[in-house]
Image 1 (spheres, rainbow, N blue to C red):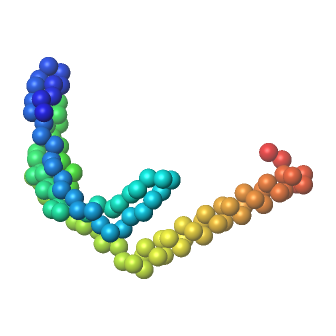
Image 2: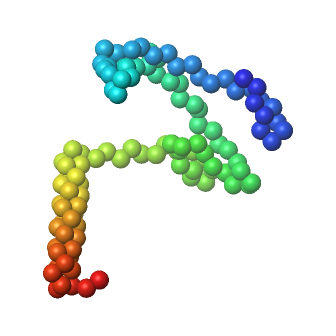
Image 3: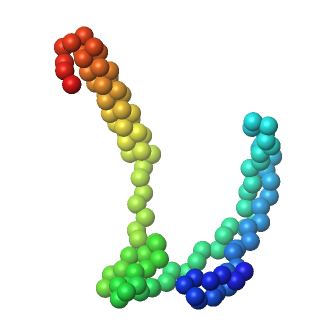
Length: 114
């Protein structure tokens, strides 16, 4: 496909993704739907060192160290830490809800003013 951007023409060939329909599916509001799985995983694009207006940058997934690309270290989070984080978030949400309901009822009774 021929495209033009700011007067420069280039060819764009979008990747073709082959899928296989899975058995899971159904009907929603009169429309049939099915899950589709990829036949082949997509090919990742190579990381590139780029420059924009004199500033060097790299594609996602790399960190620049004095112009040298290095991989980001993956941060692993244990399932216990995830569970603890979810529980504390849930408790904060519950506490905020309780406080807002308490404040509303206090203003309705006349104990607090806005």
